[in-house]
Length: 368
Ligand SMILES: [Zn+2]
Image 1 (cartoon, protein in one colour):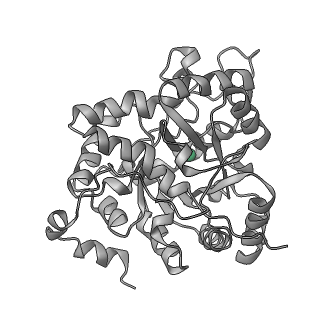
Image 2 (tube, rainbow, N blue to C red):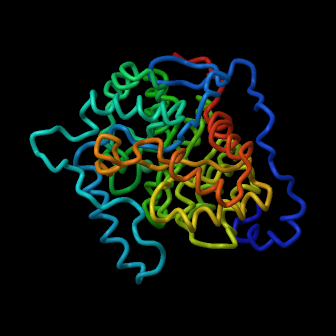
Image 3 (tube, rainbow, N blue to C red):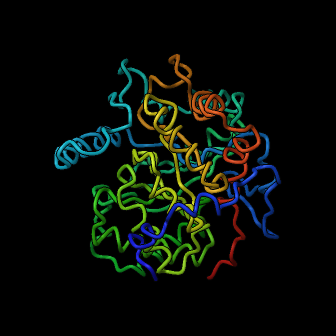
């Protein structure tokens, strides 16, 4: 197999004219028996046509998750010599201003209200990218989905090196895969994600990625990843491909963090047939991301793009606090794309069809 860095060199000027832009017009075709697994029930993919499916958000995190995340990220960035992008996540502490109130991701009434508001704003389904090592609570997701009526897909996996539970260090790849398969077979999880490399891929992260690939082969669940602002994106995809995972079942995340007007890495991801995740939207970084998205459209990759906002700390981003809420990809980011000239059908294809193409899977018979 050609190493990605060589594949990148092969991406010449000819590609832009050779690729056929995705029209986003035709209703995607799903294999017979394909479903999207939400926390409350399995849905036919055809049922989620009424709005956007946000493929990477957070509805349930431990109160100390983002403070830990920010402090680890701060210790990482000086090592990069000031290169790269500053953290795109909001830096507010995760605790609300009034200590008497629960953390918003542990307040089912508030979160159900936020889900109802997101649905009104054009969201049909939200994927939660958490799992137990991030403090994700499946019962909480079920509760807010039931209260609001908004379908929610739960993730499954292990996040990234600084957040791994201790057993990852000692378990073999097959033991990790076995545990993931056990979770898929006993819990209403609908996707493997978010699975991350915190910076340069560590041996443990490589082990987890290989285990994820094995769990994918056993369950058919799609995979979406976390990268450090796009770093190692092609290495992640290489690893999955080397394990026999079809790129069309993988979304590589946070590639909007690669501020490259030539979008070389994103083009390489799309050319291989994987999805490129522009998944931290609706904020001050939008202008640069709009340019990169439009360049990828120009290159013919409308069918390979995914948008979401990775909603995490931002208590001030909630509707209740006067912010745009969970639908900001639809209400804040999408209008900027229209203004940049994106056709409505293409936008619909990216927001409504592409995430369903990623998430829809035919369940495999469960092994005893
Ligand atoms: Zn995330």
